[in-house]
Image 1 (cartoon, rainbow, N blue to C red):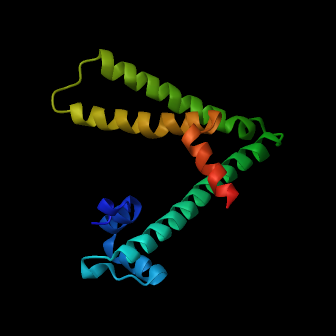
Image 2 (cartoon, rainbow, N blue to C red):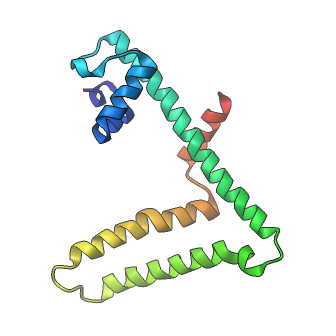
Image 3 (tube, helix red, strand yellow):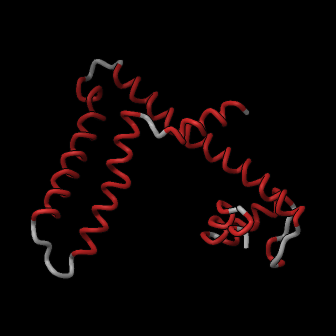
Length: 154
């Protein structure tokens, strides 16, 4: 019902942990989502709440990324060579492991019954590890930059 009204974030939150999400929405907006339907006025209020909630999530994510980068800046100021280079060693290890795994599952025969494991690991490596490393060193996408501009303008 909520997703059909453009409230995807709230819909996903409620499906993921219904009781807590419904309590949060009810507490913040005064709208009872357990009744089954919502009025047009309530939809407008829910959309406003979702925008505010998304903005808070983006602020949290931005601060989290900023603090990780600040930590790296502090590490670079130290005299300890290992501490200075840890992030580079760590990223190199995961990059090499990812490349080896990708080439491995591409050119080596996967035992029957293990294809799903290989697919899951490949998805994790590409979707999480590699993407995070690229995001850390090269920044995030244009869409994320636009969101940051929106957050900072409020």
